[in-house]
Length: 491
Image (cartoon, rainbow, N blue to C red; front, side):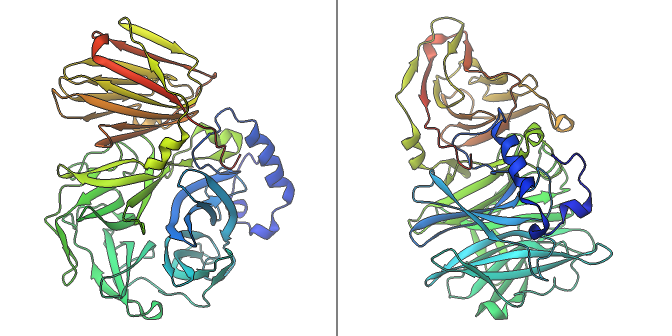
């Protein structure tokens, strides 16, 4: 594996890489003890943002940004995954390669929209000049029913509007109620303020700048907004975004950059304003979620995929020639004034035979769990308990509603500058449910059917197939373990 990645290596054209580079990485990746069983992961190299999440030609389509030649951020392409059920994913290969003057230094994030018998892809083409100054083009491509992709000859949007820098990316393309095309983009003003921008047009070739979307945090959203999504969840406009440099006084967060959500009562499209927006909240209370992408499916569900990884954070899996993964696909709902998210119902198809865990004493260890399973747990009100999986400790007090997740003893440490614990609150004096989806080196924790979500990467130094439960009231805690089918996606 390449020990030191310079700019020339990171941005070497794909056709100049020898086949031996990927072949060598494959061997290294196959030996990794941290490979996953039912999450989307890269075959080799780096995976980051989910892109183009859509339903087309009778299949779910989900692309992700990739750099296949090493576990680093380099010249990005899009890899296409497709599925009939949102859990069994097939790798359909590289769909968008950076090979034109308008995406020469990378096919960055974007979206997809089915139009007649084709899928339209819109994404940011990253281009650097001789002085390595960025120019961001918003470009388009058509994908037909065979998976063939043909790029447009010219960009849809040549440059950011006046007053904005070339930190201008991640288009979400949708159809407005009146049939016009609408594009939501992340941007940055020349005064270094992050702003979401709106473009509209009768056709894809005449998109024009309408203005900035007013979300209630104008001037307080940091120096950049990435990966903006605006979807409707149970009748409520829901703005999902990644602010960079946002002050903790606006909304508290622990990660280097947060993934946040603002729910609202409505949208005034004349003034481009979210009506009665709520305070921004963390989309995920854990350590590792960013760049989530949502869309409304033909069956009416609003679905979400998240990148389990963060900008400027290197995890131990990179030692083995690969990096990062995607979350389970989540369905969104709006309840009790907030966003809920939970793995789609199809995920239950992965369950094997239920194994009830009989808690007989204050501390019980359960051996033979394997390393990929779902733990379904219920704790009565006013019951303290601690759950430990592969060194990740989850302390839950249903009297106060306080939750503490600690990964300080979960194998190989990483990203410690951003802390090894996360704290959040559930309703006090109420029973709590927890569904923990564990997969070798990642776990997704869903409290109260998605009222709170906490995602954790962890890297055990030795294989583990044991979990521990500690409680002073064993009669008040009920747990069932379900082994989950190993899909070995991209293995």
